[in-house]
Amino acid sequence: MPYRNSFSKPGLLVATPALNSTISSPKRGEQRLGPTKRRSLLGRALSTLFLMLACGVTFSAFANAQTTLFSATSKPVTIDHGNPAPTELGVKFKSDTTGYITGLRFYKASTNKGTHVAHIWTTSGVLLRSATFTNETASGWQQVNFATPVQVTANTVYVASYWAPAGHFSMDMNYFAKAGVNKAPLHALQNGVNGGNGVYVHSSKSNFPNANYESSNFWVDVVYSGQATPATPKLSVSASSLNFGTVAVNSATTASVTLTSSGGSPLTVSSAAVSGTGFSLTAGTFPTTLNPNSSMTLQLQFKPTASGTATGKLTIGSNSTTGTSTAVTLSGTGGAANPQLKVSATTLAFGSVAVNSATTGSVTLTSSGTTAVTVSSASVSGTGFSIVGGTFPVTLNPNQTLAVKLQFKPAASGSATGKLTLNSNSTTGSSTAVTLSGTGTSTAEQVDLSWHAPASSSDPVAGYNIYRATGSGAFQLVNSGIDKSTTYVDSSVTSGKTYNYLVKSVDESGVESTGSNEISVAVP
Image (cartoon, rainbow, N blue to C red; front, side, top):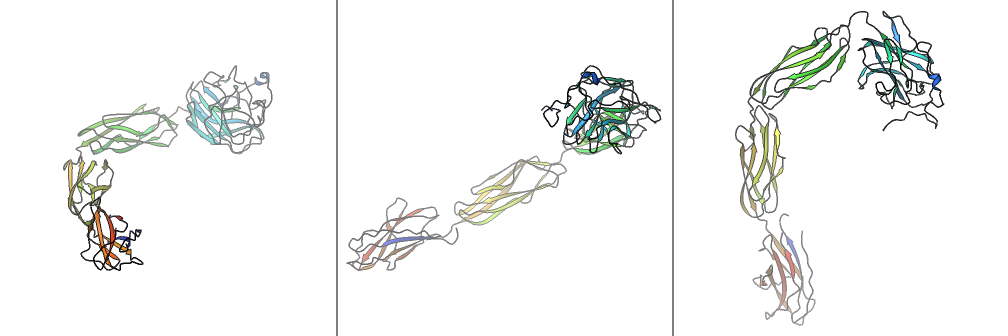
């Protein structure tokens, strides 16, 4: 792009020109269980006298007698609490004997609308079973039976609850304040025996109820049955041994075993432990209850720390009638690590590049061994060479590649050499070098000067002399003879330098005028 400057014009003797110039070049909280209106939790004051309701035992037509906490004639004092908030409502209970919860009951107000879902939980919030109520009546006791009964352990506390998506649940405060409900073998706990009772949670969807308010009874009940025949939980394991094969040292591989409940009653897998150097369990949650014919997968990992054969053992704890402890033998071999780094070229030539211009090239790194290679660093030496693509350190798995992009930007004319050095854990050598080369070429720069001839002069102008100073140096005449035109091209300039110019008019006798105003031009 041209650079132009204008000059003033003194008028001494021979008229002085006004100079312009052009440079050219070829290239450049806690919850609160409350109703919608401002009133007490129940929406009305209740006397504890009404709370001590008669409770009974009901039996239904199962193979064994079915026991419940409340009789068919028991009913709440407050059938509709009035709160419309979606709520999970429950009761904490336990049994004197090991048996099964075959179903769940709750007392329903006619305003308690929506689809209700029954849940049985552990006190830590693990969901053991759920079932959706169907064919409900408009109000009164509702019951759903579980497709598979829930085995409960004697003297262990559980939580039974149901989901009321439209609220309007039944609720009597202080019901469990001084006593629980005892219908052997079932017991609804007195408040404080195992935390608060009953329990609830306001939520937009079903959740474990872990809050309590004023020892309230939400009228949730369970159906319990003793077993007609002994429980037959049985654990089947997909393999008795697991071989991981040969694995490079400090690399990892995984394998899995499947646990299946193959008995006639639910199986509880209480634990899984792994022994042996390099072996570990990476997937599997315990305790887990598996219904008959259901299964779960355990994922194990083998990551050897040294070469050679390794053995270990997976030990599974359960209530299986075939044995409370089941073992799976683990084995594998640690193989020698073999990381290798392959570079696509040992030399990279950038060719001729104009000074202060840039061009790029690349080399490809490949992990060519049987184990991952780590390239810890990459550095470049040589003026004008640099890395512009590629981040280090980097780990490349076998057959994985990485392109390292390099740039050559010469600052001066002439040949240049450099080197790319890669450091890695390759067994072929910890340091790999790539030779770099390129040539910087000068760009032909020139300064185009132009000026205006004096409009009038008492002494006719015969031509012009052009003077140039480099930097702060003295002005020197650059034209070899009087320039009769009003332009001049200075093609003897060098990139990176600054030049100052002035022009003087010359008459027929060779007498010069005073100099024009000066201009300063920096050549890129």
